[in-house]
Structures are given as structure tokens and as C-alpha cells.
Length: 123
Image (cartoon, rainbow, N blue to C red):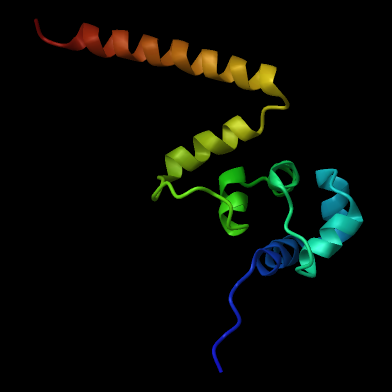
């Protein structure tokens, strides 16, 4: 008999076990209702994007990983560990204002690095 496919509920349950958390602890840490977490773990519902982001933050994992495990991440190809870390940092921002500030700071730093790199080139 073929093995049962690994579902989002299976993945989430393994993450909880790894942390010695129960569903109520994930609900408390994520702000997603205990009932919704329980229905998710039972495979009865698929969390939407906002609930997945909250779950990712509670687990301290990149949201794209959670979206991928939930099967709703658009095909993008493999991303590097560094790209995954950038996404994780970005996801930690509390709101759009903080995300905009992070982007602005990254753009400023990139311009500084490009200028520095340009200054070291031979004429």
C-alpha cells in the first residue's frame, strides 16, 4: 500500500512536536484561534495567507516555507538559504510601515555597497 502523502497538517504537527508545543500553545503564540489550529491539524481546513503568516512568525520560520508546506506558494524555483533569510527578516516586520523602512534601508545599503565597489575598480 502506498504511503499517505505528507500534508500541511502533518508538517505542522511535526513542527509542534519538535518544539514540545500543543495546539493551544501555537494558537496563543500565533494569534490564530485554537479552533482553527485544531481544524487545520485535523486536515479539515487550509489556513489562509494571513493565518499562515502568523503561524510562520510563531514558529520563527520564513513564511515562504509555511506557504510552500501549505501548497500555496507560487512556483518560483529553488531559492538560496540567503534569499530565504532575507524573506524571514522581512516577514518579522510588524506592519507595512516597518516593511517599507526595511526596504528603504536595504536600498540605501545596496547603493552604498555599489558605490564602494565602483570606487575600487581600476580606471
